[in-house]
Length: 66
Image 1 (cartoon, helix red, strand yellow):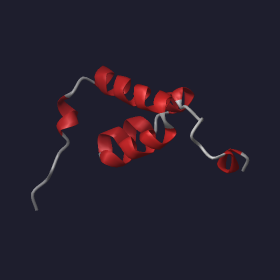
Image 2 (cartoon, rainbow, N blue to C red):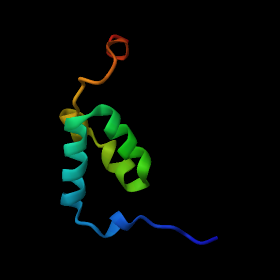
Image 3 (cartoon, rainbow, N blue to C red):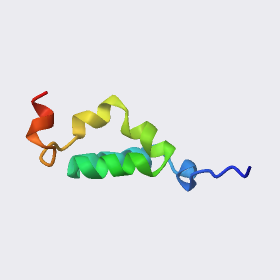
């Protein structure tokens, strides 16, 4: 089976962090979609510091109350 690798793996880690940070600070839904796009963004998107940048405006209040 041919192994497919992410073209993002060759990018500078700082640049990838910046992308994830900007997405997280713009939209929670977009962060979820970014994390689903590839393993690398999933790993970065799950880091603790990302949640400190997360915009919660588009998260339903019902989720935050539980």
